[in-house]
Structures are given as structure tokens and as C-alpha cells.
View 1 (cartoon, rainbow, N blue to C red):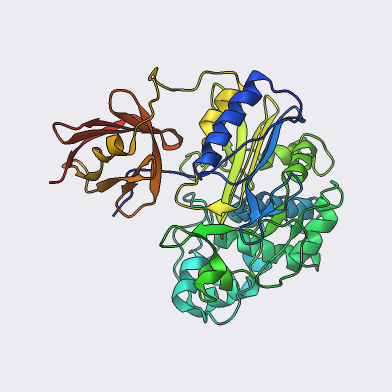
View 2: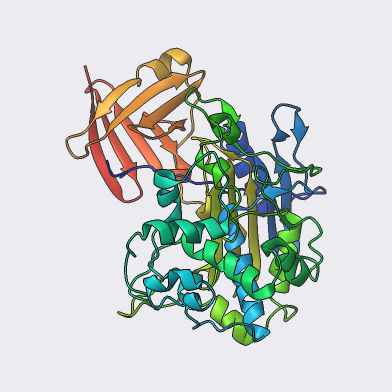
Length: 461
């Protein structure tokens, strides 16, 4: 069933040690609330023109030992890694070792049967290659780790059809970035990790940043955040507990689409370097931060490793999120106003949420978009009258409302449960997903709102 309700991801923010401005107080209040509800566990850094406005760690790096997170804790970046892969390609182009419009078959001749896909197509997700994760889930011998050359091997072996012709459409592609990682290795003659370290991390002083595959090539890293997900009972667990045939285990050897690890502080160094010419010049950055168009003239909203937007209120914004094996990551750069949001989480549970619009509003001293409703504290008995299963003739979706301690929770069919804040007039909200539920207890009805959409639900007998 298509998910029509609840698009919930994660983000966070930080705090200064000595005295808080009104903006810092609002950010602290926002993220403390998320942390208290189990919706956030990680590090946040918010900066204005390179000056840290808000920096704070929330929660644990290791649930078993009780080790706490701190500002130097290292997190796996998941797909936030793609911007480093893209920069690696840009640096090789500047060295004259490749061209953006080279066909990938020049470097990976085994894939010539996919036609005229270029390096540029891979950078901006317009190549049309099939998803390697789906292929490996169906075909791969999961007793073995997969590496980048194995992606090529499986594509050659099974020859899954391309999804579309190069440049015809935009479709986010981990396959494309895994192949870019391999091209970096073939062209540079170095491992992906060595090349990024020598050309990006070391020159920028990113001393706590590295390419690291914790299952494929484990080693001891001090101050490392382990990534946690929820099991079927709602307990925090490492994905390794699901066994070696779970995809985050056997795909751990693949780089390019992920596997860069870093800290909030190092990512701020990266952010600052991108305003300078330490790595690339203004022409290079124009390519990196420009949305490409498909052959029919449609904007994709993606450049080289960055999502690109230009909202009227905030000017040009580039960002990227990531999610993998218990990590939820996010970086956003406001290019016209030089503001930076960096969020690294090591929990990816059903409660994890991303209030990016709220963070932006606070950064620009805007009021948060909330109704003028008074919050209320309800007893366990008062919450009980809202509990039940609600169905709608307008949506093929049931929502179960239940009590958990002193909280009212809701869970849409096939999705994770989320907590509801109580307000007057029988109103409950989950602000990170812009959800509001108004109960009519006597009529056994509930009005459900998410954004501009609204639906009527009825409590089952």
C-alpha cells in the first residue's frame, strides 16, 4: 500500500555553553523536547557565517557501555558521503585525469551494454542504472561481503534493464555513486579512502574524518557512535543483531554512495572550505551547486552530490540527508546568507523526526507555525477515552491510537508509532510531521490533518 501519511525523518541542533540568545533558547527547547520524547539522539551544530551559534550533544554513543556523545564523536554519514565522492570526481577532472562527459564504459568497459551513460549522469542521478541493492537482495550470496567491483560483476552477470535513457529522467541512484567510487579508484590508482584523505580531509584539517567500513574492515576508533534501530518490540538494537544476511552487513564493503565518517566540527571545516578556493574555484562550485535539467527541460533539484533549492524566503540552499544502519544525517548550507545546519544522529527508530522547517524558522527569527492552542496535561484515565482503531472511507489506512505511560501514541497501518502532544479542545499534534488530530469522543470520530490535507476517521466498535 502506498504510504499517504507520515513522512518522518530526523534532524537536530546545538547549544552554546555560556548564555543563550533567544534563538539558542528556542533551538534548545525544540531539541530537548525531541530528546525527552525519544525522537532525537545525536550531535547538532548550527552556525552563522562560520560562527557556531548552537552546538550540543544529546544522548549516548554506546547503549551498552553508557558512553555519552560529545562534540568530537564520529558518526557514519550515510548518503551525506555523496558530496565527498562528487568532490573527488571534480578534483580528478581538474587534474585532467577524466572528463565529466566521458562515458563510464571508458573506465568500466564491462558496462558498455548500458550505452552512453556519462560520469556527469552519475553525478546528478540521470543515468538510469538499476538499483544495485535490489539486485543484491535477490541474487547475491549473502555469506560474502560485497565490494564495488562486485556491483559491476552482478550488473554484468544479470544485465538488469536500465530504468531510462541517460539524461531522460532524474532518479536518485546509489548505483551511480558506487560506480563513481570505483572510477575514483581506477583513475587515481589509490583506494577511495586514501584518495579522499589525501585530497580533501588532510588539506582541510578534517582530522576526525575517514572512510570506514565497520563490518567489512573493523578497527578500534575512539569516541565512535554506534548506530541503533528499533527491533520488532521497539528496543534499540544494532543492525548486526539481524545477522550477516541483513543488507547493511553484506553491503558494508561498498564505498562512494556512503561510508565517509565524520564529526560536526569537521563538517563545519568542510562547509567553510566550500566558501573558499582551497579545493575548487567558483566555476567548479557553480557546477556542484546548480540543479541539472533533464532532456525535456525539467529541473531535477540536484547538482553534484547536493540537493539544490532556491526558496524565496531563504535564498539558495543546498543540502543532503543520509540514512543507513542506524544513522540519520543531515547538512544544509544557506549559500546566500551563509548559515549552516549539521545534524548527526545514531538512532533511526520509529520516533526519529526531522524538524528542518522549524530550525530554519528559528535561524531567521520567524515565529513557528503553530496555532494559538493551550497545551494540557491529561491523566492516564483521560487519555484512555481517545484510544482505539480509527478507519476512514477516504483512505485505505487504519490508525491505532493507544496510551503509553502518560503519552498518547498513534500508529498508521504498516508504519512506526509516534507520540502526540495534548492541547485543549481534544486536539493532539505531532509537529515534526505537521500532523493534527481532533477527537470527537461522543461521536466516536476523529479529524486528521497533515499539512493541507484532511481526512475524517471513525472509531471502530
